[in-house]
Image (cartoon, helix red, strand yellow):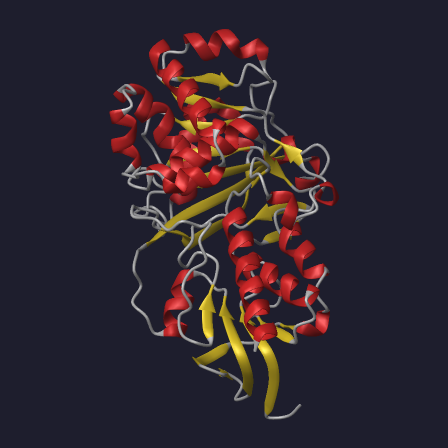
Length: 421
């Protein structure tokens, strides 16, 4: 290989944003290459196969409620299986099922009568969902924003409902137990859950970047390739190679992007731990609801049973249990598994003694902080410089849909610039 390579565009990062950008360039016959430091595509979206269990790196789902998701993904080929339209909330020593009566009429009474909030709280939640579903998604990002906790109080939700329902729900979705993230984030999350499903691909979440990568020529992606330095028109690699190019798109997560572009990291990252267990035990519900810790005590924020949603996640006769911990003070503790087991035993009894620990993922940049002011993901961000632009979280929002949209938008901008020159 020559010491110098030449491409019209270089994309740094083969996460979903970089792959969406590459797909657009490929469709428009632009000469490009993708540089990925790992050995496979996906970025933060990865799935390990351990003893026939599919372990996503952190509990993740694909939300089908995004209005444009089918523009970027072939949902049918992903063989999606959906979680029930509701949650089980642990509160006052027992679980309360809060479910969408359109899908689970049998839980209508428990949803209305549950002690986790008042009837007024449920009416307010219904009205909020109705208001965000009536108008296009992009309207949310043209509205005023504030911290989610302030927004909920302003809307009249009771403190009990905020603490027992919204806090673990919001923390499960964007890892923010303090609810300081933007009210815009809450609004689009409510819209997603009202209009679509939280689903799992049969092949694990990694099936999403794999599908994107499958439509790009294999020779166009260079894995195990680390970028050392970026300049206009030039990419220097850690192995000493130099790549000359007209355009550069940085599609890494925010910490790496800031390091490569030598810019200040504007916001902090939020972390999580995800502990996976296996068992022959089944939870005491007819439906595999996502379980939320509405008591706000102990290490657990939420528990999911992925194999009860999609049987591909576990061997026959086994249940895969995914437990999310958000307290950063606990992430590096050697006894984290023990602390989680103690709380699970309080919830489920002696059956927990037979749970087998499979693996724990400690993810220190799970998401960037999403406190206001947030960016409008429907707007094209300004280029970093004449020849460098960024996509993904940078000047957008974290999340699968926003990453896909950001990458595709960046690709269209590159095509426009190159074909006009």
